Image 1 (tube, rainbow, N blue to C red):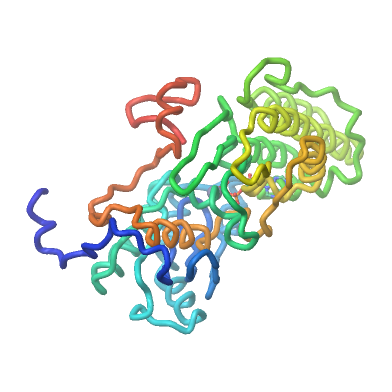
Image 2: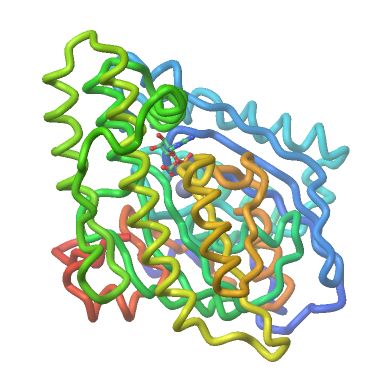
Length: 383
Ligand code: KG4
Ligand code: ZN
């Protein structure tokens, strides 16, 4: 293994020299779940320009199964990745000659899909003698508000999606501390499970939300796990099971289904909002004194949750920042931006081609190691 690297063209030797003032243009690739995406982002000083962004969702392929099927996802990424990258380049008006480095999600996620995107990125980097930057998907989400809102460091990020549910204290580029996390399921998983049990569609979140508009959120008294315990961890497994059990008893009772969706949504919102209020109370503002709350991830599309979080932020004197939906869900612009910020700061390993894809890759490895509740095991800490 040690010798093959010598046959590769030399990579940028200046990698550790800060390039702050220079402009850089990065091709980003994302394929860790069920979206195949590519984007070209230019960073000039502090200004972000998205030159193109292309995304292809696999929702239809997974819909019959009520959830993402890893094997189907990997194949679908492999079939479309080259086309998506070609389109992103075409839309940006550039060819690879105009790209300074390639960045691709290299974990955490469904490993088959991660490998497709990462190897596509590595192949392009090798072919054009460009640096390759392996990006942590969670760092992409963490930096996503900087794509359009120029959000300054530090800020509190609530990442709430189908695969993740955690608070990250984002102090600066590469400076992330996980303050709390789900100890079992992600909130999005609970939405998907309820929708699957009710037979109302996939992905579950939008379907549950649509039905919840007609319902009474006070009809069913659902659990709010860990709400009465100190700390910033979440738990959604109990709520998921309780609501799915109730769903099974409802049959075709549409009124009941709507009430259950509304009650479930209220329970999830309560858990997330209360913990967010706590997290904001312990947030240490930066030199500008500003307190910022960012919400990202697919579940951030939920209007009830957004209102609840906006209310909490207001109460804490915090600015509430919700990136546009296309940047809340999985996308490649956030991966390209993470690559661009790292490239410009010289904060990357010049031997990126040696990076091995990681199904598990916590953004803050220290807190993941210290807190076994977040999951350890042979493969290392879970995301
Ligand atoms: O971030 P995302 O697109 O993919 C990952 O999980 O990484 O998030 C997808 C999740 C799914 O669980 C989906 O049901 C949920 O976000 N979601 C929603 C809504 N829209 C999507 N959950 C609640 N309300 C919504 N409107
Ligand atoms: Zn994601």
